[in-house]
Image 1 (cartoon, rainbow over the protein chains, first blue to last red):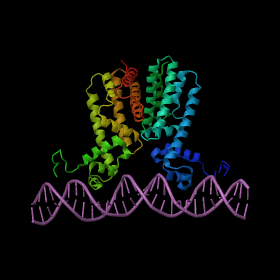
Image 2 (image 1 turned 60 degrees about the vertical axis):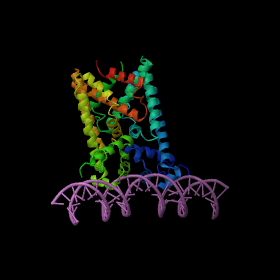
Image 3 (image 1 turned 180 degrees about the horizontal axis):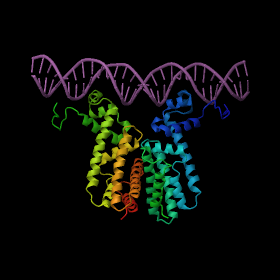
Length: 192
Length: 192
DNA sequence: GGTTTACCATACTCTAGCGTATGGTCACAG
DNA sequence: CTGTGACCATACGCTAGAGTATGGTAAACC
């Protein structure tokens, strides 16, 4: 009944299911997060699943919550402690590619924006992020309204980039082409 | 066997199915384009469908082709005959909201970018559109590389806007807030 | 007027996934 | 060593949708 030594894991927890669910979402999208495939991948059957959760919906909800918390910590950790607002804005873009899993999950969530449990998450996340961005722009001397618009604009660029990535239309993240583009975006959208 | 008078339609054609499919996609997304629901909505059964098409995949392919053609005509018609490149760029953004159906279909296609039949369409469309944009920027005196980056940037803004729209996070298209934002985008991204 | 052909209905089969019911097992408490 | 509860397997039933097989009908044609 105790967790057993962490190497072998004789028994699963709800958190294990949630993590596995997020893995699957990252790989194949929200709608592919089905419970029988999940169980197979974890080497058990759905008999196990329905002991931990009451339904697929329930797992999805919990997994999304877990992801959202993780993302929130990321936002605060990586953008909170950078003093200069310009660096904060730049790090927003550079953060693409780091935190691979979290990022892939987010991309798949965007693709599933229509889902009733996904939408509110995306909404909250977008709100938080845009507020962060707007604050940074204000700290750089922008009028509040302008800063809000600029934040929306830059966040849209980010979302659009993700969309192009889903369509295989972004240069490899390590290429010069990519670097040049990022440079361009920064120069165009972030005042000196 | 003849088309019959166009008011009453006694019998369906493949084109009818394709159009209905696009309607459904616009309303509920690609994965909701199932053939039995479609048949119900059209007042027939799938017996009819399988006479016109060999499979669901086949219908999807044809419907997407039809959409792509329509979209291409749109691009040429609305952006081709505008002289001043600046006006052409502006009209690119203003075009959101007009051509409602085509536009909603596109939005849903973006959400289904992972689908093997959807992806190449999105790729071609994005390519064409970004080329158009890049040409306009070049006509305004930009270096080719810069124009390419700027085209990608502005197209990303467009895609990001669609994403936010799917998340219910865009102001009503007729609001002042929206107008102000569009103004901001144009001023920021399109040189005078 | 009988035949063909275009179009559609009906009645299947098959699959994947959700959810339920029930029973087994192993650890640990007493 | 007996029981209890945590965890899981097995075996169901149910639904939606894909695809097939087959037969019906009405218009067109010879």
